[in-house]
Image 1 (tube, rainbow, N blue to C red):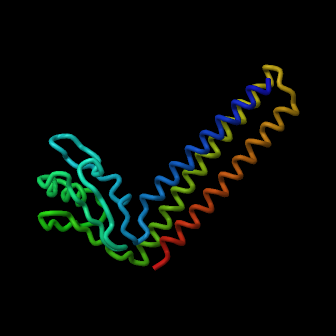
Image 2 (image 1 turned 180 degrees about the vertical axis):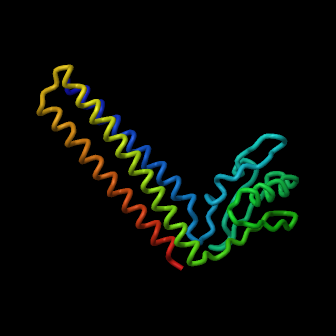
Image 3 (image 1 turned 135 degrees about the vertical axis):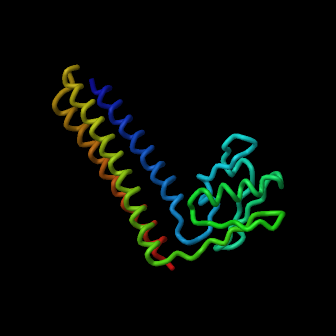
Length: 187
């Protein structure tokens, strides 16, 4: 009886943990004015006919807070990597010196900072929706355990535990979004 309630709680816990991991992943993609190799995580390069993640055809590093450097594993891949970065709509323009690609990350304008802050809030809201959906699924499973003979008290306790878990995760989302916004808005 309470085994079903425990399973529903564990499932909600896993779903909320996954929502937080997705949130962290999405927030890493939003740049805050500093050069970071994760900025190019979504770039796919045409590597002999197949789209391959940039990290598999070259090494991305930062030389200073405003510059990214890409060392291709094969020199012949410098031009395809440069094309992929330009076509990725990240607003970056790589320079090819024949050995490596160098990308100067432009300063963010105030308007762009506000847009990125809005984007971070939207990502946070999506995470909260995922967390609330996990809560709803868990509560539905807990309520259905009544048919299997679970007591009213066990059901109420299970729902209270799920709500507490939901509140904790929502606070974590708010904290991470506030931190990211502060990072974005810092000049």
